Length: 457
Image (cartoon, rainbow, N blue to C red; front, side, top):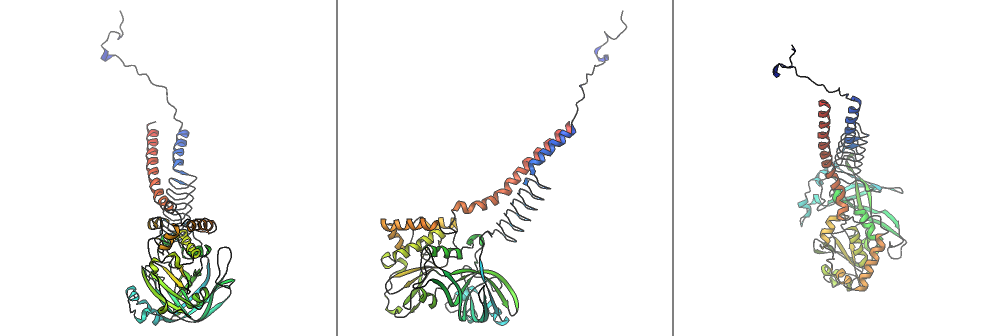
């Protein structure tokens, strides 16, 4: 008889525990795996998330202390920038494209005594635009200096503020019209290729008592710093009567105190007898179209406004114009995206000169050019000016337009981008931080899962 527990009740029997063989956890492999997950978040970076070759950054590439940026320092949604937001190649800027190289050729110093400065500062836009502007909105005495590589000219001058959409306060980079006491040579450029010189001249000399200083007062992302480049494009089409334009640094002084130093676009004044005599001769008439309104500006020599039969300049027919020059103007409008001129939905910002036989259109107000989206929306595919409608309805004239357009497009250094090309950098700036956040959230959750697995093991 057995005295064991073979026949004992089951509850009194010992349960046999079978232990699994011990699992060896390779801590080195676990840490390596976790490190691989982190490396997916930031590659070759230090203290960064979702970044590449960055430091203290988030969703950035080759950046320092930045968010959603490329090659930037202390910036957000920017490229090649420092302390900026939504900008390209800028320092201390907001939503600005600083990639356009502004070739500054001269420095202009405007010194105004404190009493006059304060009086000019009281001029409001409403007063300036009124039918009878007060004296403090008119020309005031000052001392002006023009300094470039060849000359340093200082003389008395008068100046006034100007502008419409670009109107600025006196301490906030205003635009100016200036009249010097004597003529100053502001520029002298060679002619060649399609660029034409004034009649009987080998140089286009800009010499006058008058100069316009435009502040590029639209936001930089709107203007693309295009005014000087736009006039260059018009010249390269072979267009005559194109104002000279160049960038200058302007130092604004109140007494001896420097109030501002900014870069301006210096533009040759069209409503100036020196400009008209240079291009048209001593016999001329000049009219301006602004916001659909026609205004006579000046005449000279044997042409007097009272003796001129003026056609409808708002609906000027091709028969009154020089065909090739008219085509060159239209090509310039298209290539610069000048939607605020004569032929792109608005009758605005241009002049007509008359030499006694033909009418010649003169481009003006091109500070809002090279805007792809606005141009595509405004142009509507066909010109609104009658002379170009007539031209494009004629096979011979249309062929001239297409030929000149193709020729000039390949020689100019800047043309209007398409809407997609213009919007892509902005969309990229907006999308990058969003994508970075989404990637970070997903990666963070995955990292948490890895840690939970490590703890369970």
